[in-house]
Image (cartoon, rainbow, N blue to C red; front, side, top):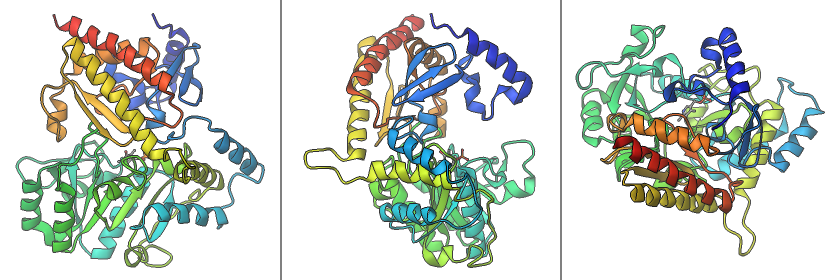
Amino acid sequence: MLNLEKSAAAFAEAKTLMPGGVNSPVRSYANVDCNPPFIARAEGDKIYDIDGNEYIDYVGSWGPMVVGHAHPNVVKALQEAVTRGTSYGAPTVIESELAKLVMSVYPSIETIRMVNSGTEATMSALRLARGYTGREKIIKFIGCYHGHSDSLLVNAGSGMATFGVPSSPGVTKGTAQDTITVPYNDAAAITEVMDKLGDEVAAIIVEPVAGNMGCVLPKQGYLRTLRDLTAKHGALLIFDEVMCGFRASLGGAQAAYGITPDITCLGKIIGGGLPVAAYGGRRDIMQKVSPAGPVYQAGTLSGNPLAMTAGLETLKIITKEPEAGEADYSRSLTLKTKKLLLGWQAKAKEAGVTIQAHQAGSMFGIFFNEHEVYDYEDSCRSDQESFKIWFKCMLEQGIYLAPSQFETLFMSGAHSEEDIDRTIAAAAKAFQAVADSRC
Ligand SMILES: *Cc1c(COP(=O)(O)O)cnc(C)c1O
């Protein structure tokens, strides 16, 4: 039995200090009815709690830790950088270095602006799209998450193509009304909405590989449909690649699927574990951002030298040209992920449990679901009880997974073949526990 005594005490205290004891909701483990381990440190693919338990980590801080925790190159660069001061609020050369490296991998980004969180990136991209087009409506897809800014915390109203309603108290009806929500992966639905309202729409924002309703891949041709519809109606296409950037492939979903968006949002990996995100795209659009243009957006700590350093070192590792005979970084992540998922699928089958296993590069996840999962409704029909049993059994065996079926898991360069084998062996037990619970 996992001993989490110290974590439980720390959580009890934290609950007296912070709402729900955490600074971001999913960390509270509310979905799995147990206390979260409090983390003391992490190194490579391992994370350690204050009770002294060691886990193989597939959360990776929800995506950023693609080269593993405390990578020596990142640590060394940060140690050197911190002696030069932690923030200047003035231009630095390292901002341009990170910009150039990102743009070399994302040719659709001709001009970029660094911000501090994915939320800021998407919020600013929408303001820009509205400023550029002079239109007010935006379209988002049900189950896609783009951070917590007001206009994106919106649910579908009743009936097709109605305007959105707030999904959180505190979001005004007025704000929600300008956001139209449509089911993901449904080409007919988005075509109908665009035919009706396309000329009022500033932008369609989409996770081109969805990672916040579990890992859900776009259907064949779906992203092309979004590209064609936005072009036809003079709306902008915003790819929120905060999660799938550098993961679906090195060049993100846009490279993997061959679709060029007008604006791309990046985050998570580009900060290498420090708070960085960015939005960028076509030069004529980005030139509307202040001070080049009239669309206001700013940040005291944007382009922070420590954050830029962590991002730059991380991207240098994953973009490095492989030596002869060496596998390319993203490709090796993809292969390891595939091995893990094939292992999980085999163990699930042996236990007689049906799962849907999804992978996009180094993003992956499973659903306890008899049917294919293409959108949020499908995802919601997955078996939550089985997930809880599976999750807890994996945690007991030292495998640290996201505590919700609506989250995605991540592979890093630090995951060893041996740890992947251990994770597959643990899954055999966990799927058996699920099977036993059903009889
Ligand atoms: C994580 C995430 C965000 C929000 O980023 P924060 O840094 O948490 O604000 C936005 N979009 C997507 C697709 C994400 O996965």
